[in-house]
Amino acid sequence: YLIRKDNTMSKTKQWAWDTAEKVSDDIINSYVKGEIDFNNAKDKLSNVDNIELCGIDEYNVDEVLFTAKEDYWKKANAEGRSA
Image (cartoon, rainbow, N blue to C red; front, side, top):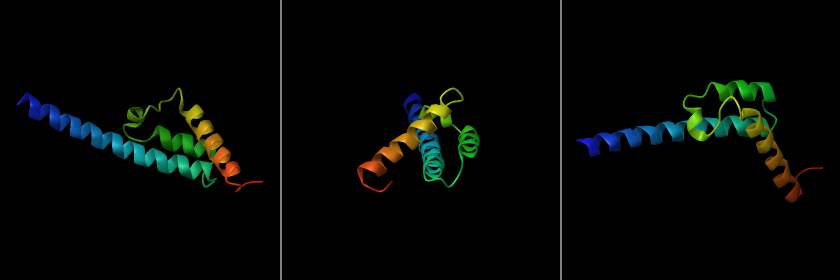
């Protein structure tokens, strides 16, 4: 019974993690592409269920967004897609 319970808990946690990751990735991508502004992205990320499973919390959300935008532009510059 314990193995089955742990396996179910593990699957539930994995589902929660995957869902939070998908939603947070969508928000971050919208931000780096300029579809939403910083404050909107921060608010949306703060309201994602189980976001802490992705390593994002109220203390590092700014850094996550800044780093994502920086990485996006570095890649765009390397590919010659930006001025």
